Length: 221
Ligand code: B12
Image 1: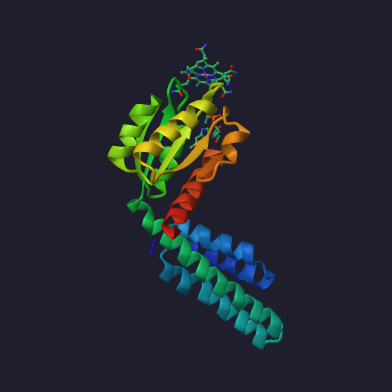
Image 2: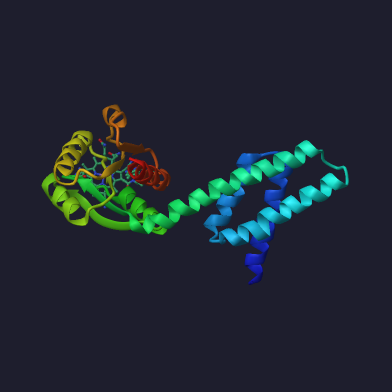
């Protein structure tokens, strides 16, 4: 193993042990999420991060430095983190099987946020189809019918763009009703925020989570 990877794992291991000793489940979960993002396998997380932290907890308990309740809490946190990280792994492994189509509606030329979103989704493993700026509703509907995306992301900046999005989504639903929608941009109105099957994002950072949520919801229907 190269030394930077080794240093990364031992740093994560120390942070995970500290989280267990502090009884901080959220911090423990964040460490494991960071490990997953660093592409560590579940086996490496189990063997090199979680197990050593629990061994340390056991040693401290034996020496009387922490109580049996502290040891139980550390174990409970680890069991919960294991379940959550396996679910996160399952979701990320399923992403390449899901297609996301991205487009800006008719007359909309602002596409920087849309491109950022496409890159983030691609990096997260989704199969991305980028249509870009100024896509009229019939063309978007035809493309959705052809590419059969699970989710369509759209961005709208110009005034009146919210209505353009509603027209576009309506047209898509007639030819490809299976898609969920993730929307962003400064022209979005509160009307759009309350429509079921639509996720509205303030920031591109929220896109992967929003797409994951729609994919998960579709799978459970
Ligand atoms: C670059 C730019 C352009 C470029 C766009 C090039 C391109 N390829 O995208 C060009 C030159 C084409 C352009 C044209 C125009 N523009 Co312009 N443009 C801008 C500028 C400077 C930056 C926009 C940008 O890229 N921002 C960066 C991105 C990352 O941020 P964002 O879009 O705000 O997105 C954030 C969130 O909303 C969210 N988000 C947005 N979309 C999505 C989508 C998803 C799926 C998700 C998850 C999240 C998400 O995530 C981002 C943050 O993380 C803005 C200034 C500004 N204040 O925004 C003006 C601005 C948007 N433009 C403006 C105007 C007026 C115009 C023109 C009418 C100018 C003209 N007279 O021709 C035309 C209209 C073109 C059209 N029909 O669309 C106004 C809009 C005012 C308004 N809303 O009423 C602005 C605000 C400038 C201003 N202060 O007047 N523009």
